[in-house]
Image 1 (tube, rainbow, N blue to C red):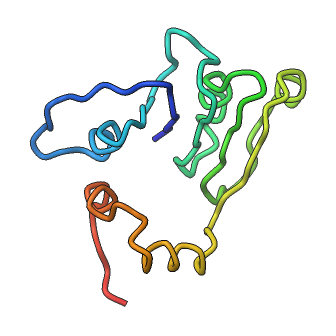
Image 2: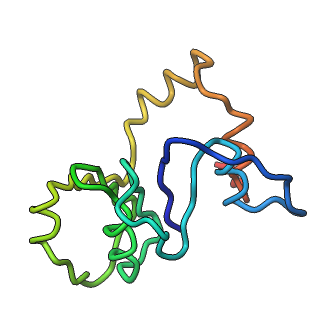
Length: 127
């Protein structure tokens, strides 16, 4: 799955059962699984599939001077045209695990909408 944050969102009725992509749409987050008709239109693109095969898809959807977040651990190598990233001044940001202390503080303060987060979960495990 590739997610990106656009300027606006569209709300649609929930499918039965609701999919992860539908839940993201309800949070105002557009999702893509193929090339959009207007490439290079997103400010932020989150590449979170865990495979390198769709790196080009993510790259073609981020606008010049935009940000690509690589949110996975990859095996093997990924062929990347670095000159396009440099010319368009695309910012690459790696993200594996977040700052747990800050996340726990947000949870304790009640800052996060946990109901929205729970909608995106498909399975929980006991510690």
